[in-house]
Length: 239
Ligand SMILES: [Zn+2]
Image 1 (cartoon, rainbow, N blue to C red):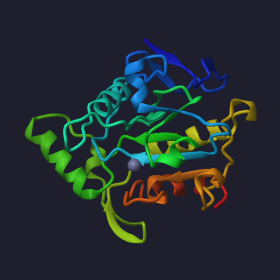
Image 2 (spheres, rainbow, N blue to C red; image 1 turned 90 degrees about the horizontal axis):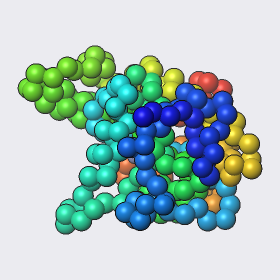
Image 3 (tube, helix red, strand yellow; image 1 turned 45 degrees about the horizontal axis):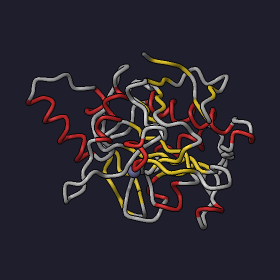
Image 4 (cartoon, rainbow, N blue to C red; image 1 turned 135 degrees about the vertical axis):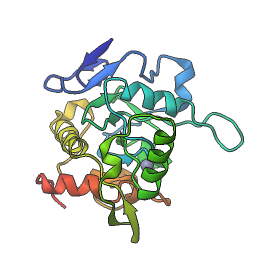
């Protein structure tokens, strides 16, 4: 059954009914089997909102969230062991926003120190043009429906200072990126989620505040090639 509203500390936040939750697509600290995928928040607020692209299919519909969670739970390391990974929110191709973890618990999505200080969101979108072409080809070979977004014109973007050919997210996804950012930036400070309406400051994890993309963390990831942060700036978030 689908429920509505962002949950933090077991409480549903008023004014966030757009966000959907599904009992079958939820990581819970109360479930010992889920704990390796999660992290307790240390003292201090969550001050960062970090966006990712999944690098997977454009998924839409009510089941998109549950399918994303199942895929993340099934991820393995090269040696076959379970990968510890989780995410607070997912955005479907049609702009649906799903929550998968209580915001009082941290997720494992970006790099150890930032995990404890951040709220995470995966956008269900192939990202690179190479990924999009490969996924569309596979879907067509199986005779499956192919979302029109796969055929959007590829664009050259810059991520980590390098040129990368991307297929853009859907307009509905970019609208949802902004909508989620605005909901989180509006949370009262007593929730412990204190995300200013700005792009993330640089510096050590405990000093970072605002919205960022995975490419802005240490490491080699390119997501989201500026699409999420550009949408926030266009909506009035400070650079
Ligand atoms: Zn990422």
